[in-house]
Image 1 (cartoon, one colour):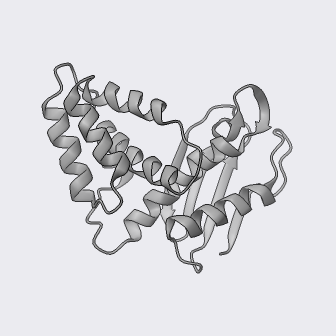
Image 2 (cartoon, rainbow, N blue to C red; image 1 turned 90 degrees about the vertical axis):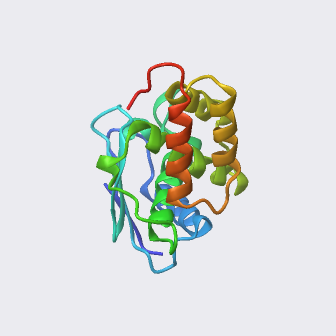
Length: 188
Protein backbone atom coordinates (compact mmCIF):
# COMPACT_ATOMS: atom_id res chain seq x y z
CA UNK A 1 0.00 0.00 0.00
CA UNK A 2 1.80 3.14 -1.16
CA UNK A 3 1.60 5.85 1.52
CA UNK A 4 2.99 9.35 1.20
CA UNK A 5 3.43 11.58 4.23
CA UNK A 6 3.90 15.29 3.63
CA UNK A 7 6.22 16.66 4.84
CA UNK A 8 8.68 13.80 4.59
CA UNK A 9 10.84 15.49 7.24
CA UNK A 10 9.36 17.44 10.12
CA UNK A 11 11.15 20.50 11.49
CA UNK A 12 8.68 22.07 13.93
CA UNK A 13 7.34 18.94 15.66
CA UNK A 14 9.03 15.73 16.70
CA UNK A 15 7.20 13.43 14.25
CA UNK A 16 8.60 10.69 12.04
CA UNK A 17 7.01 10.38 8.60
CA UNK A 18 7.97 6.68 8.35
CA UNK A 19 6.17 5.97 11.64
CA UNK A 20 3.06 7.80 10.44
CA UNK A 21 3.13 5.94 7.10
CA UNK A 22 3.53 2.56 8.82
CA UNK A 23 0.62 3.32 11.16
CA UNK A 24 -1.56 4.47 8.25
CA UNK A 25 -0.69 1.32 6.26
CA UNK A 26 -1.58 -0.95 9.19
CA UNK A 27 -4.86 0.84 9.84
CA UNK A 28 -5.81 0.87 6.15
CA UNK A 29 -5.31 -2.89 5.90
CA UNK A 30 -7.31 -3.57 9.06
CA UNK A 31 -10.25 -1.36 8.09
CA UNK A 32 -10.53 -3.06 4.73
CA UNK A 33 -9.00 -0.68 2.22
CA UNK A 34 -7.35 -2.63 -0.57
CA UNK A 35 -3.59 -3.02 -0.91
CA UNK A 36 -3.72 -0.98 -4.11
CA UNK A 37 -5.20 2.11 -2.44
CA UNK A 38 -2.83 5.05 -2.38
CA UNK A 39 -2.76 7.03 0.89
CA UNK A 40 -1.66 10.64 1.30
CA UNK A 41 -1.26 11.97 4.84
CA UNK A 42 -0.71 15.73 4.84
CA UNK A 43 0.34 17.24 8.18
CA UNK A 44 0.42 21.00 8.71
CA UNK A 45 3.14 21.30 11.34
CA UNK A 46 2.88 25.10 11.47
CA UNK A 47 -0.15 25.09 13.79
CA UNK A 48 -0.76 23.34 17.11
CA UNK A 49 -4.48 23.12 16.31
CA UNK A 50 -6.12 19.77 15.69
CA UNK A 51 -8.41 20.15 12.69
CA UNK A 52 -8.60 17.11 10.41
CA UNK A 53 -10.41 16.22 7.20
CA UNK A 54 -10.78 13.48 4.63
CA UNK A 55 -9.96 15.40 1.45
CA UNK A 56 -10.47 12.72 -1.21
CA UNK A 57 -10.98 9.00 -1.82
CA UNK A 58 -8.71 8.53 -4.84
CA UNK A 59 -6.12 8.80 -3.50
CA UNK A 60 -7.32 8.55 0.10
CA UNK A 61 -6.03 11.91 1.27
CA UNK A 62 -6.18 12.95 4.92
CA UNK A 63 -5.20 16.48 5.90
CA UNK A 64 -4.49 17.26 9.55
CA UNK A 65 -2.99 19.93 11.70
CA UNK A 66 -0.12 18.65 13.84
CA UNK A 67 -1.99 19.20 17.10
CA UNK A 68 -4.25 16.26 16.21
CA UNK A 69 -1.24 13.92 16.37
CA UNK A 70 0.38 15.47 19.45
CA UNK A 71 0.68 14.10 22.95
CA UNK A 72 -1.47 16.56 24.96
CA UNK A 73 0.94 16.33 27.90
CA UNK A 74 4.08 16.80 25.81
CA UNK A 75 3.55 19.39 23.10
CA UNK A 76 5.25 18.87 19.75
CA UNK A 77 5.73 15.16 20.61
CA UNK A 78 3.99 12.47 18.55
CA UNK A 79 1.21 10.42 20.14
CA UNK A 80 0.52 7.10 18.45
CA UNK A 81 -2.86 6.88 20.21
CA UNK A 82 -3.93 10.32 18.93
CA UNK A 83 -2.74 9.53 15.40
CA UNK A 84 -4.52 6.16 15.52
CA UNK A 85 -7.75 7.89 16.52
CA UNK A 86 -7.56 10.46 13.71
CA UNK A 87 -6.27 8.20 10.96
CA UNK A 88 -8.47 5.29 12.03
CA UNK A 89 -11.68 7.34 11.92
CA UNK A 90 -10.90 8.84 8.53
CA UNK A 91 -9.71 5.57 7.01
CA UNK A 92 -12.77 3.73 8.36
CA UNK A 93 -15.03 6.37 6.80
CA UNK A 94 -13.08 6.17 3.52
CA UNK A 95 -13.52 2.38 3.54
CA UNK A 96 -17.25 2.86 4.21
CA UNK A 97 -17.61 5.25 1.27
CA UNK A 98 -15.86 2.74 -1.00
CA UNK A 99 -17.87 -0.26 0.23
CA UNK A 100 -20.57 -1.71 -2.00
CA UNK A 101 -23.96 -1.35 -0.39
CA UNK A 102 -22.95 1.34 2.12
CA UNK A 103 -25.13 3.82 0.31
CA UNK A 104 -25.15 7.31 -1.07
CA UNK A 105 -23.42 9.44 1.55
CA UNK A 106 -23.51 13.21 1.16
CA UNK A 107 -20.15 14.97 0.86
CA UNK A 108 -18.54 15.70 4.24
CA UNK A 109 -19.29 19.41 3.78
CA UNK A 110 -23.04 18.59 3.67
CA UNK A 111 -23.14 16.33 6.73
CA UNK A 112 -24.77 17.81 9.80
CA UNK A 113 -22.81 17.80 13.05
CA UNK A 114 -25.10 15.07 14.47
CA UNK A 115 -24.70 12.90 11.33
CA UNK A 116 -20.92 13.25 11.47
CA UNK A 117 -20.92 12.42 15.19
CA UNK A 118 -23.05 9.31 14.64
CA UNK A 119 -20.78 8.10 11.81
CA UNK A 120 -17.65 8.72 13.87
CA UNK A 121 -19.11 6.78 16.81
CA UNK A 122 -19.69 3.87 14.43
CA UNK A 123 -16.12 4.15 13.10
CA UNK A 124 -14.50 4.38 16.55
CA UNK A 125 -16.56 1.45 17.85
CA UNK A 126 -15.23 -0.68 14.99
CA UNK A 127 -11.67 0.49 15.73
CA UNK A 128 -12.14 -0.66 19.32
CA UNK A 129 -13.21 -4.11 18.11
CA UNK A 130 -10.05 -4.24 15.99
CA UNK A 131 -8.09 -3.88 19.23
CA UNK A 132 -7.08 -0.21 19.05
CA UNK A 133 -7.20 1.93 22.19
CA UNK A 134 -10.14 4.32 22.07
CA UNK A 135 -11.76 6.67 24.53
CA UNK A 136 -15.32 5.35 24.65
CA UNK A 137 -16.47 7.82 27.30
CA UNK A 138 -15.28 10.75 25.17
CA UNK A 139 -17.43 9.56 22.28
CA UNK A 140 -20.43 8.80 24.51
CA UNK A 141 -20.22 12.34 25.91
CA UNK A 142 -19.91 13.87 22.42
CA UNK A 143 -22.89 11.81 21.27
CA UNK A 144 -25.00 12.86 24.26
CA UNK A 145 -24.12 16.50 23.62
CA UNK A 146 -25.54 16.19 20.10
CA UNK A 147 -28.56 14.00 20.86
CA UNK A 148 -29.42 14.57 24.52
CA UNK A 149 -28.66 12.81 27.78
CA UNK A 150 -31.49 10.29 27.41
CA UNK A 151 -31.99 6.54 27.36
CA UNK A 152 -32.95 6.82 23.69
CA UNK A 153 -29.64 8.51 22.86
CA UNK A 154 -27.71 5.93 24.89
CA UNK A 155 -29.49 3.09 23.05
CA UNK A 156 -28.65 4.66 19.67
CA UNK A 157 -25.03 5.09 20.76
CA UNK A 158 -24.82 1.38 21.64
CA UNK A 159 -26.28 0.38 18.27
CA UNK A 160 -23.74 2.55 16.46
CA UNK A 161 -20.83 1.48 18.69
CA UNK A 162 -21.51 -2.25 18.31
CA UNK A 163 -22.82 -2.31 14.73
CA UNK A 164 -20.49 -4.04 12.28
CA UNK A 165 -22.50 -3.97 9.07
CA UNK A 166 -24.31 -0.66 9.32
CA UNK A 167 -25.04 1.16 6.09
CA UNK A 168 -25.27 4.92 5.64
CA UNK A 169 -29.06 4.55 5.71
CA UNK A 170 -28.80 2.85 9.14
CA UNK A 171 -26.52 5.56 10.52
CA UNK A 172 -28.65 8.37 9.08
CA UNK A 173 -31.88 6.77 10.39
CA UNK A 174 -30.41 6.41 13.90
CA UNK A 175 -29.23 10.00 13.74
CA UNK A 176 -32.57 11.34 12.60
CA UNK A 177 -34.80 9.31 14.92
CA UNK A 178 -32.61 10.02 17.93
CA UNK A 179 -32.44 13.74 17.13
CA UNK A 180 -36.25 13.80 17.01
CA UNK A 181 -36.42 12.65 20.65
CA UNK A 182 -33.87 15.17 21.97
CA UNK A 183 -35.57 17.24 24.65
CA UNK A 184 -33.11 20.12 24.27
CA UNK A 185 -31.81 22.18 21.40
CA UNK A 186 -29.96 20.12 18.81
CA UNK A 187 -26.67 21.42 17.52
CA UNK A 188 -26.70 21.09 13.74
